[in-house]
Amino acid sequence: MKLEVFEPAMCCPTGLCGPSIDPELTRIATIHYVLKQRGFDVARYNLASEPNRFVENAHVQAEIANGLETLPLTVVDGEIVKRGAYMTNEEIARLTELPVEAFAMQDGEKPKVRITLKK
Image (cartoon, rainbow, N blue to C red; front, side, top):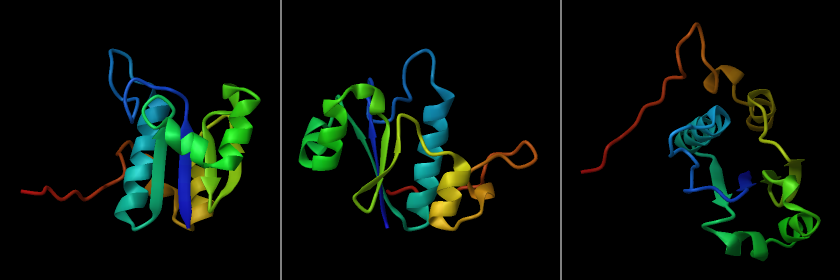
């Protein structure tokens, strides 16, 4: 399964910089990190930094021709599954067959993620 998210223009690839960080972008960054750690093929494309990705995908190109309010767009295996909003934790859990707890706070704690630092 390949999960791609086509996002509106942001200041950087993640949108996680600047004085006020959108908590929704933090949630999506966490989910994508967890999915990558578990071996899922996921990608986020920012309209400002990767416009070629939007042009190369005929379905996405057709969607944004009608207006950019359709962003963010979520595409799974080439099929648009959500428009105008990010998928919820529950939707991603159903899609990936992972427990929703993998993406959400449990008893006030963030999901545990193991990271490896490269030397």
